[in-house]
Amino acid sequence: MKTLKIGIIGLGRFGFSHADNIASKMKGVQLYAACGGDKGRLEKNQQLLDIPVITTDYDEFINMAELDGIVIASASSLHYDQLIRACRAGVKNIFIEKPIALTAEEIADLERVLPGMDVNIQVGHHRRYDRSYMDAKRKIEEGYIGTPISIRNDNRDYFFDPDFYRRFSPKSGGTILDTGSHDYDMARWLTGAEAKTIYGLGGAYVYDFLPEMKDVDNAALLMEFDNGMMGQFSYSRNCKYAYHVETEIHGTDGVLRICTEPLNNRLISIDENGTHKTFFKDFYEVYRTCYDDEMADFVDCIRTGRKAAVSAEDGIKSVKWALKATEAVLEKKLVLL
Image (cartoon, rainbow, N blue to C red):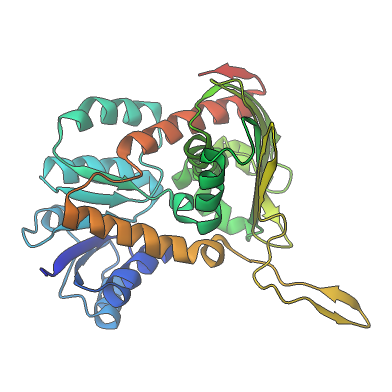
């Protein structure tokens, strides 16, 4: 079996996780090259992960003939430009963290350019690789809940220091795009439906500087899907008890619930102070196996030549939705898709 050579751009928390997965967990795969703007970080990780080639030159990186595929795990604000440049350089297999782009103009350009490209793109919507959500999808398809009537999703991110959001928000596309694009991709994947209308509310309840960045820290959406199904999505950036994403799909014959409590252990301890449970503290703790599985799927796509399960089209649809949902929240109005 040929050893596949993979390169990665970006070695932050997401990037390092993917890099470590490729370097240490995958048989027949070599993390051959890494690219980034911080030479010191590159050199440190070169030694740690035994990476043969490092470079701060992105054009050099995407033109390495040895590479069978690349992973784009840089800041969200760089995704569109780096994806376009990689496609034009002739890279055939690209895994890109979501979001695939941040603006309507970037999305329009991708829709114009990508159909003419001979490239297999996989977008990092990792919840499709979560075993609980995969089981829920199977049950929906088998008719376990009958016809879906509504889907509800609460996405509560663990509280971070305000300085983090001062740095992060301008580069992320905002709360709805950063977190909600995952939720919408999950909803349309589970039910096969697309959003038709969105009504939104929200504001800066905790981080009072976010309105300057056209962002919010808490929001709620009410949606109608094109099959008549109802949707309720909520978001929070200040959940101090846990990282908590909870999903419910209600149908004519039953209901499915995922993560009603964000338990990271089934153990419950009891003493004179009461009953105690331990919760997930961040999204990586919840989804770490999903990151492994989605990268394994990317490698399998390279080996077999099959198309990615989470395509560029899926990534584009999630961003289109998120931009409209952000408009609905910021302007507190009903938006038609």
